[in-house]
Image (tube, rainbow, N blue to C red; front, side):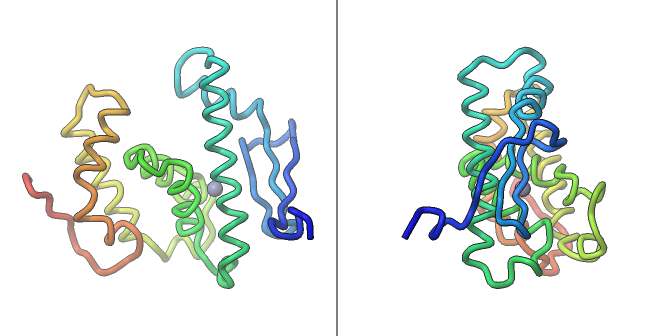
Length: 180
Ligand SMILES: [Zn+2]
């Protein structure tokens, strides 16, 4: 028995890829492009990232892509899942404590936001997505001018009551926040 025998995933560099990382469910392989990782980080920080910041971003991206691979390994219905469900799993691993960052990245993912979605995405998870947007707007309103770290702290403290309605469509018509 080899590690590949268990993990069934290969990783490689692809310096031509337009994405930072990509899990291919057909070939069971992951491609990373460190140039894209660095560019994205640079855009986010508005400056050149330090070596440590780059390592941190790369580490979390690895967890994200390996998360897709692991999800594929254990979920018989992996191919039937929506992009929203795939990305929910991967971002939950990438940002286990950073609720605000996780939801913000999830909702702006090209396959989730609608930019690159297929028909399955147009008709599903809409309620959950609109609840997330509402929650993010609420956090932004309450933490105006604060750092991402403080937004994450606030979001974590206020998410618990609404967690269920963010994951799947359950017919919630509207969020009500305690201090609305
Ligand atoms: Zn992903």
